[in-house]
Image 1: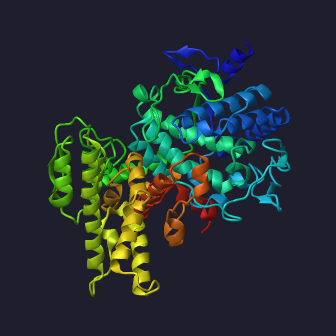
Image 2: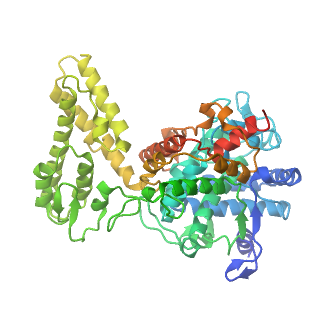
Image 3: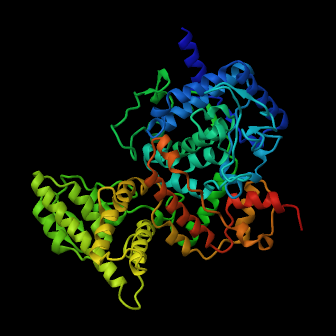
Length: 582
């Protein structure tokens, strides 16, 4: 009976109308709360710290860390977890508002956000231990996973690296057609930047010690909720493992740490916990800007330019590049067409081997990528598969030799990057240049070209090589961010001042004369690279995350290249710094 009551407190006991709750509880952005409501929230937070509920939540998160990160249940668990937190607050103060933090508005320069002031959540830690010394949580003493003060250690000393801006979040939401792709994109992308930006307790598995955890995961849950609202008839029931390795999942699976709850109990907040997020304005402003880009590009595809809509082929998931789309065809599809390579019946090993040796133009790295995927799906005995794979490898080595030898010719700079798709180029270029530079400078006497090529091909194409790891991640990342968006953005003539003014109005900010703002501050900054240990500790794919970040930077470059474009994050920052000043 106790468990039943506890479960009901998380789900909420509400009156339903047509399967939805009649009076959902609003969850505001923390900066939109009145000072009294904000103080009430802080007092309730201290209440769950002193009554042991915060310890319970932190321990629950630690105990289930391995199953709730790097798996499809990531979003579902944390939705239930935030609702558990909200229920704990309600038991201390019934009716207390439970806010979220829209950190995308602070993406340009997070440290300048009001949330890090003493009137909100306090700032960086102080002293050798990084104990929080100002704000409502100053001198908090915690018990999980040992007795210590609440700690913060911002990842850039006294500053914080940029977060994902609203444009990147909207691009991800518009591109993802499956739950698993969205969950994976959030977890491998925007989620970690906030944890590591604040760091201290926030960079550990007992991160729920810091109230920022729940404000942050309220925003994460809002990203999912908003995505569900885009197609409510299907997405409030959707749960899958797209973009995750391992076995398939079911909505009947149990939520880790909550043995009486199944995933399907968390999917529709309108019929369960009964709450709704109040938009901060960042989403609406980003959509307005995207609509203007759509208008100028002459494309209308529901919020994203059609050129940003991923190319697909029969059997390919949305977002697969054209060069890989055919390789994603089901094994029983009749014929697979590789550009320039002729038809390859998926069951014909001999044809694949022949195409690998003779049938494909060696200058096409994209075709090699496609054939690689194709060979990995071939049926037939192991000897045939080995023969096809060996032939493919020889073709790949030949391709690299051609590129390198051409690059060594007089007045012809080494340009491996241009021969590969852009998302792979920077990795290949770096490794190839390093080897060639060593040879040219004779740092390794006696090392011949064949030795260089052997080392290069092993490092790039071997089982543990760069290309192999990139290709493993590539099949995931393409489902999260739009292909072709940067090309569309380059075609946009500019954003009119009236549209920019509308952005300031939507965000309820004082207008700023952007011509007087330094160019650097008008630009959306790149997002931070996270350390490898973060991905390892959270069961994540560091290669995938690197590809995701690279695509985000390409998108950011595209927006920054539009004359007159003002990101909602930039507007928020410059209004705070320059608003009201002449």
